[in-house]
Length: 103
Image (cartoon, rainbow, N blue to C red; front, side, top):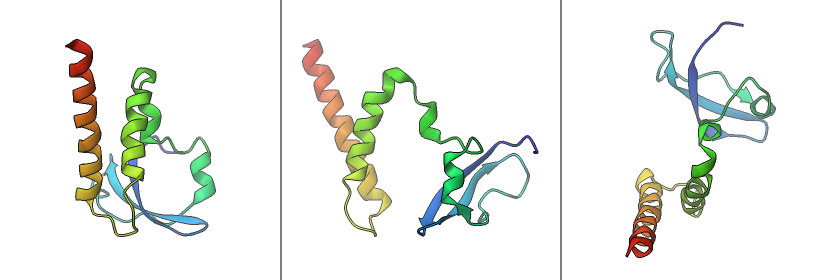
């Protein structure tokens, strides 16, 4: 297998496959292209590493709060602004909690 640093973003899913767009690739001209559909079961193998896997243990609780807030965004047509607003709300909550702990 070719040694390759490639980052994919899942854009749609069916029951069995995921459509992905290439976010980053060390091969020139690949970024922004649509990758061939990937079987969902391949994501459970060592062929893929989720970005979330790189989060330090100390940040897991904070990261989980951000993910939970963004997962609470309802609807199949949610906009990026709605997800950003959910994350910003958690950021404000964390800032307030930190200020209370220091004060």
